[in-house]
Length: 158
Image (cartoon, rainbow, N blue to C red; front, top):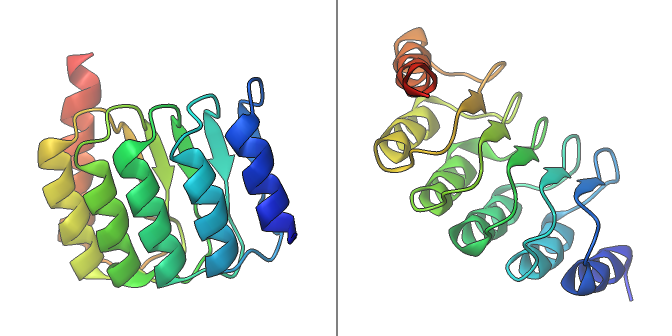
């Protein structure tokens, strides 16, 4: 099988691996989809780094679907992928009812105001996310300020 199918098979039977760093491994949408299918049933993995790969909206859709059901991931790095606001909307949908992910990095993912608005709406429902990195995207300051304020209020309540 392909590398992503092998990783997917390992993740489906994983009983001990808690951190997986697949940054800079040239993953495409289909690879991310295979990994996410395994993470729909693997709750052992806590940290996943998919930064600096080649996946786009369809990979983001797979991540969003996985986040709807995954009960293990607490940190997710998706930096420097062409996720765009369309992909950001899929991820924010997946996070609405996710009660485990605490940290998400989407730095340099070509996300604009529409993606930021989707994350702002998601934060009204998701009470677990504490860190959302949207640096180096094309988002107006007022949206990043609103999101930062929502997250600051959340950490102050702890």
